[in-house]
Amino acid sequence: MLIDGIPKKAIESTNDYKIVIIDQTLLPHKLEYITLKNLNGCYKAIKDMWIRGAPLIGVTAAYGMFYAIKKNPSELNIRKAFDLLINTRPTAVDLRWALKKILNKILKFKAEDRATYAWQFSKELEINSIKQCSKIGDYGLEIIKSKIIKDKTFNILTHCNAGWLACVDWGTALAPIYKAYNLGLDIHVWVDETRPRSQGAALTAWELCKHGVPNTLIVDNAGGHLMQNGKVDMCIVGSDRTALNGDVCNKIGTYMKALCAYDNNIPFYVALPESTIDFNLDSGVNKIKIEERSNKEITHVSGLNSLGELSNVKIVSDLVASHNPGFDVTPARLVTKLITDKGICNANSKSISELFK
Ligand code: MRU
Image 1: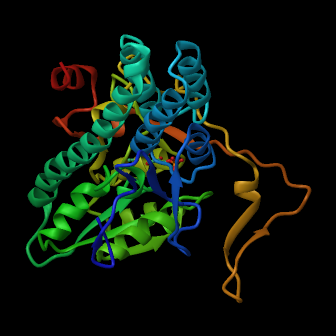
Image 2: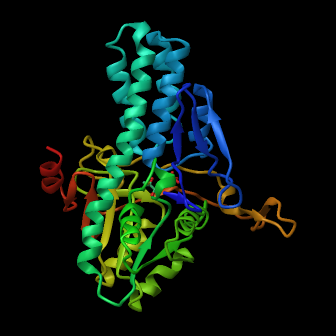
Image 3: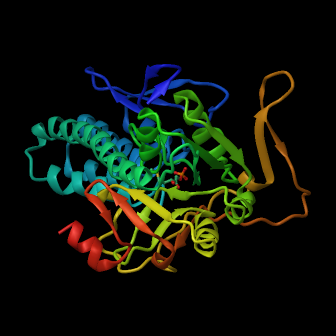
């Protein structure tokens, strides 16, 4: 998508086997790039959330495997890299999907051919992610077109960041929004700030503004009120892991938005590529390992101080205990449809299995 009119991607590989990412921990205040050249760099990028978002985590992990293999293509080393990377983030299934896929294939190659294959595989993953997200955008666009009313702004609410910053390009939930905007449709996005890490405020609002899409930032608790007052026409979010029955695990707070949407008869869509479906998981509620994040994400906030410097301040007393689950599961019954790269389906096993035979 565009940053001030210039096309950008969240990850770019170079011809000399480097990859360049945006340091997302600095957004929206600074746009800085980091070049990753080894396994440790990819590990840190995922673990410390320089990059985040399910599809982008998967692609970065694949490049991490490439660097490990380039250094030492032995099976022992490959398995060590696999173990290191798989434990970086527990909830997003794309990470496991990409790592298992590369591991299963790579060991069939002779040691000296493994690095070449790993680079090709990672590059394909990067390119395919763009194609998949673009497809999600096309399918989602048809839904928007079918609902939009002439001469009336169409209001879409989204949670967290499921835009191009979470993928390679386009995004999942934001892909239909970009396609609709690029087509000149009159849309507006309500952006949930998404406490505690503020992916909505820091990333979604930023990337929408940079591309030019009209949007307004709201606190996480405002969505229900807006829905009751006819200010939301549809909700669309991404997914970190989708179970076979259509239960959707996504950023903490998604479930509450889905409940509000259900109560107000507002369609609630989830956009995801095939790699986000966990085909080994029958249902999601109480079954998905939910990432537990640092208490500091709740007890402290960061931003620019009056001198324009990045600073981090404490907002609670030392006596306060806190608990910070990173994701929740929205039961399939609250999901109107899944918008995937293969098409649109109901959030149930029959429909998902038919689409992904
Ligand atoms: O903790 P994060 O920032 O990695 O969480 C990201 C999300 O929850 C996204 O909504 C999800 O990965 C879908 S991204 C296309």
